[in-house]
Structure formats: structure tokens, C-alpha cells
Length: 435
Image (cartoon, rainbow, N blue to C red; front, top):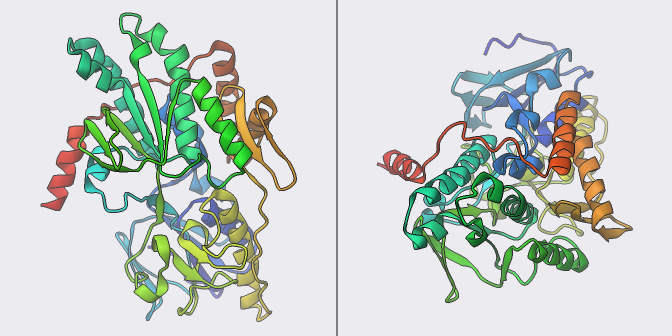
């Protein structure tokens, strides 16, 4: 990989997400050599992916070059690489561009969509965890409305304009709200010769309330907001299969829809060599102690979504969100320096700063440790927090201008089919890979 030899210990970070970037920044001025590996050359601000999918933002406004994030940091190296295997016995990492030795390895690979083994949903449904997936979903949504114009079959037209979103967490709630606003304010103007009132947005939650990780008040208010926007909220129903046109459930309810978005679960992104049963817990997460060390391995650490740190307050590990990942990255940065200097490490304590979700224009719910509120003020708080955590002044400015424009004009200018996407192509590719 053409990484120069150094007398300083080498820390290799796999993954340029929230945790990996926070750790790299913490180590930027320390006496260590930092090598960050990622299959993309950009950091992706996942909380705003749904706005890319619904035409509110372009992808470059929520992505930022990793090299620019850490530009000017001494002893920092980035390599665009796909990690293939971790050899813990020899402290080497095998990638598609070669091997690299590490003194300390930090796994920050994040999470991916968990389809729970349902191949029908995996091949014919849509995920929304990456920028390419969000662009695919945007294209599919727009293409379906274009196709609806061309068919005389009312049943097929309805299916093309129907959406099923599975999962009542923040992603599902925010996407449902955004689609409802598009149906209300944009589709009638874009498609005057199509009865877009027939479009249906269905949000399915297997539990008894939306936003289960938030307060009951937030759940009730979010559901009320969605119903006011015209979203059909279905609770205590579990989706069992999808054939590309029909969504079947464990109840008698069947949905005819050409678009199913799966937002019902995530799992950690695993690595070969770190997949032994004794290392993993539920959701494919690596078991770590209070110092982020992978239990049973020397010099290997894990942070963020991929790490399972079981504590009295969080017996199933910390939430798979940005805040825990960033706090863990900063904590591990301090502890690695202390370890190298042969000082005692400090156990990690997560400081829950709250959670929030937006449902649409002037509608959001916010749960802070001491305050809980909903409505217009919560919406402004949600916007401020997301702008604050975006990386790069240019991204903050672009997103802010887009939000102001969308608010004033009630429009979403990025509803562009940049690259066509067809579901059957996805199925064919899957079958090719399987064969």
C-alpha cells in the first residue's frame, strides 16, 4: 500500500463513518501513524439519506471527502480499499489492494440493512443505507409515476403509485412523512394528467407503536402527524414476503405495491477473520469490553454500530446511532494514547444526549434528557442539530439553502432520474451472483 515505515505505533481504522472519523481526528496530533481504510472515499451523513431519496437534497451535499476531513494531519494515510480478511494471529489485514500490518486495529465498519433471511424482500425490496441505494430509490419512485402515466390498467396504476415502508423507526417515519409531502404538494403539479390522490403511503410497524426507542408521547405525536399528512399507519403487523408487486403479511392484509422500502432492521458489517462465534453477539456485533477491546483478541478494538458493549444501563449494547459512535471514537482515541504511554485506560460511559425525528414541514419530535417537546420548535431544533453535525461548511450552507428554498417554495428540485433503475435488473444481478 506504499505506507512508509514509522517508529510510531500504527493504528489501522477500518471504516470512515462517524466513529472512524472521530477516532482519526482524536489521534491526529498524537505520536501514532494512522491508516484509514474504506471502500468509499467519502463520509456519508446517513441521517439525511431519506432526503436524497425523495429529491430534497443532492447526494454531494451530505457526503464529504475523507481525505479533506483529515487534510493536513501529520502521520495520516487513507487508502481506498475493500477489506477481505483480518489475520489476527499475524496482525495483518488482507485487502483488494494488498496487505498491511497493524499494531492496533480498530473496526468501525458500521451497519447494513438486515433482511432477516428473507430473500424475496432482499432482492425485490429497496434498502436505504447508502448513497447509491438512495439514488436507486429516488429513480424508482419517479420512474413508477412516469410508468403510471402510460398504463390504462387502473389496478397496475394504483400499484405503481403505492408505497410500503416497513419499519416504524426514525428512518421509516421520516421517509413516510417526506413522501406524503411530495404527494400533497409536488405530484399534482408535476403530473396534472394523473390522479395522484390515489397514491397510498403505508407505514408498517411490527410493534404496537412508532419510534419505540423514544418516549410514548413522541410516538403518539409522530403517528398523529403522519395521519394528518395522509399516511396509513399499520401497527402490530409483520411483513412476511414480497414478490415485487404484492406485499404479504402475517395478517390478512395484503398490499399491492411496486415499491417496498425496508427500514425494519440493521446488522453490523462483519469481516472475515473476525467472524468466530465467540466474538459475535446478536446482530453480528463484536463483543467489546468497557475499553472498546474486542473480547478475546489482543490489539483489536471495535466502535460504533459494529461494537456490542454490554452495560447495566445498556444490556444489549449502545444504540446503533451516530452519537454513540462519535463518543466511542473519541474515547478510544484517548485510551489508545494512554495504552501506548502505559497509563491506565478509562472505561467508556455513554452520555445520552437525546433522540429526535422529523415527520415533515413544521412537524418533529424531540426527546432530550430533561425535556420532551413536539411540533414547530422541535422541527427547528432537529434542523439545527443536523446542520451542526454535517461535515464541511459548504455542505451546511448548501443544505440550509435547500431547506429554506424547499420551505418557501414547497418544492424539491432534485427530483431527477440521473441513472435509471429497474427492479428486474436488481433481481437478475442477484441471480447471476448466486449462480
